Image 1 (cartoon, rainbow, N blue to C red):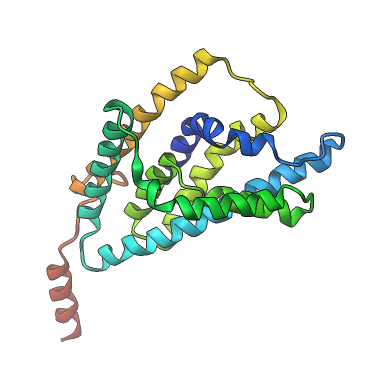
Image 2 (cartoon, rainbow, N blue to C red):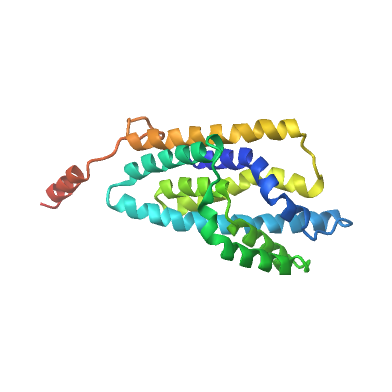
Length: 236
């Protein structure tokens, strides 16, 4: 399932370039020093991945609480359904995803903080830019967060978000070096592919939660009551 995060990030990075492209284009990289420029862009990405890892770990911890009560598979089904519903609402119904409205003040503060770092060229400034960029509300990030939540593990949740972030790195890096490097036709095709990929990932989460006995993909849920009785028998 972690690989699905990378695929989501890779295809969804076309959306990322559209949303975060202005930020990437404004990065104060040293264009006259190729090696330093590459290092600055790398540090920026490390900052983004670090923020994604923190977000993934937090939501993985939340998912872990469901696992403790034996609700991990039900959570996986719910996550899959939420992914599909979000695609229908966002892409197919023409409605705007308004979850970010209560966060406008936070977004304003994040953008102000980012604006201050754009005046610097130190490595810690590039890390901060990436870290703050990763915290900006985004519908695609919300989708990845659902995946981290369904992982039901702090580490898996963090890895899911990191792999999602890694998927966005190639295109976001290309945007730094070449402006308008994609034709409108390619952008349109990939934009249509994103909701399809999200739906497929949502279906995978649902199948995983159904416990169909498919190794690695949909493992059968063990009976906690039966496990408890076995443990008691062993003790006696």
